[in-house]
Length: 264
Image (cartoon, rainbow, N blue to C red; front, side, top):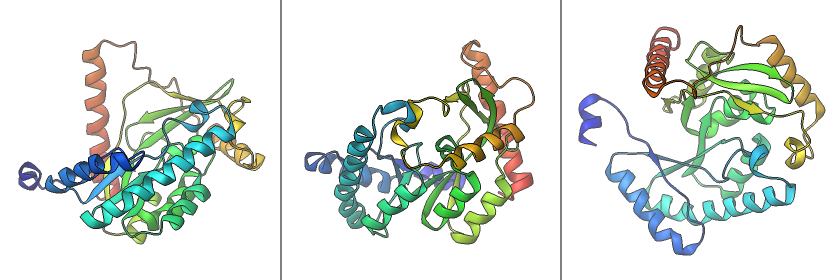
């Protein structure tokens, strides 16, 4: 906390939600520690893994979604007592209507969104529309940029330095700043191999019974319109020193873009 104050930085926490009443005491200790460190927001995730990879059936996904809701219901009184805001990330798990329904059901000033600007594209949602929907609930933002390229089972989804992908970051930032001027942005640029989003496979659709084909069509049109020129970054085969060098380069380019093009 002293170091953050010295450098003019801010602290955000990450905590694991309680699975049952027996975990509440430990969760309370995590929130207390985050608060003592100077955090005003703690980021949480309610469903493990990427929806289209983790779950084979709709019933299995719904069971985990219900478990996530119960975890939030156990966590909310702790957050309210500690006056700590819990930011639930859109973590390639629930689409916008599902997540907003959950937040409205919890109905707490201490439970909102960790708005990841890229994740929901993997669920066939329009990135700018996602930001518009979640911005009023955003306690914190993961700002990132993504590049895309088709492959036989869907599309590849690569993390890029800010300004080097297809996301409309100036518009997204404007939307958030208009809705919640006090919300802070955290850079989340992960230097890794592209992720596979196999949206043309049967397994992908196992937990999406009601998603219209028009969403898939729009997503693939977007991929084709913004397909990355040249190969996407491949990181895992590089020596560790080169991976670290690439990571630092991505972060530095992202910070420069944020200053010069986003007014941060």
